[in-house]
Length: 481
Image 1 (cartoon, rainbow, N blue to C red):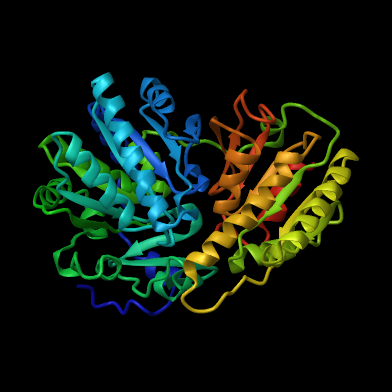
Image 2 (tube, rainbow, N blue to C red):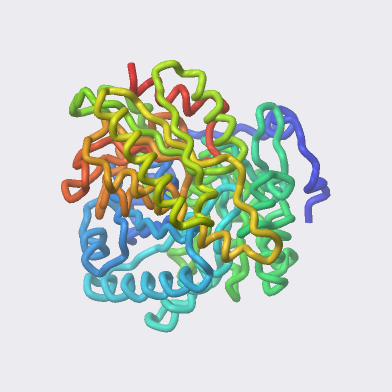
């Protein structure tokens, strides 16, 4: 166990400044050689649409039907994403969905005689239905196939969002400081809260002691930076009983070294489930670096209409970014009184008002930001499931803005995971989208498919917890040049 206190914030330079450098070019060459022999379809189950924030030219399917899975398995790309949106589900809904997903994946894999890896892509600040999702996937697949999962890899590193794991402690960057994840606002999430920042202790907490921190395997930065691949592979070969593997990482090279060792262990017959943030998907999927997207790449068809920005997330960073956006003179702002959800008739009147006003602005060439009331709806203690259901109703209302829109906006930005998922699947009716890349680090862009309400539109998925205070404003300015 680490001797570093897991509840103390630390200066970024103090933590990251003295980490040993390594030969990044040599690592990339070794990784490329290992990936050639991997020969498994990589299926990323993404609990909200923001998980594509490190990849490009990759398909995202918005359902897990046999038809969509067959299409994904048949693609030339090694990897595809399935948007589950399970962070907006109740536990019962999540369990049901993951049983269906796993069963359908098994059917298609058998039909196409293809091995696969499943990555459960979760939040880099550790929120979500964990361990439920990976446990259901493991149990369902093991019951249907001759597969035994030896362990589960925990890898929440996400550089673009300032999420680092050092000495087994997961940190979130706030300007010049790294704050242990358990001390952040994310850990106080009413649905997915936790208290531990040491990832072994976090696993113990989330599994109610079923999996112990002392039984967890820790992949250290020292081993990774020393390119001690044999030692790391041997550590993985010793993992059994679905015990957890915590991977420390502060840069992509750490993930790359780990994946080299991982593939070597897998070639020896080890099977792992994965709970990770977005960095692992880029590395194991062999996705190259790509420059940030320009306006010319994103706006294929000039409509003369305004853009549409929808803000649903309530995390502090989103509210700060919204306030910065409000200093823009070329944007119209509409506050949606989402608390009226408790009064159905008035709530419907409010929805109608917002949609009519939005339509008029967009049609006349004005960019519009619609944002939900910033105070979180609080029903009191013991009401988590009820609050989650109300948040879904509010998200449905925000989604209906896009559903009922008669004019095509120049682009659409959605702020927040549940919001962006519902707008993509229900509002835009996307069945399959292509990830074009990122407009800012960690902020992905979908290009919608032909079946969608607005085919070929740039749909910017802006996570609630990513970026600096000015990043939303800067993103909108790029699109309105």
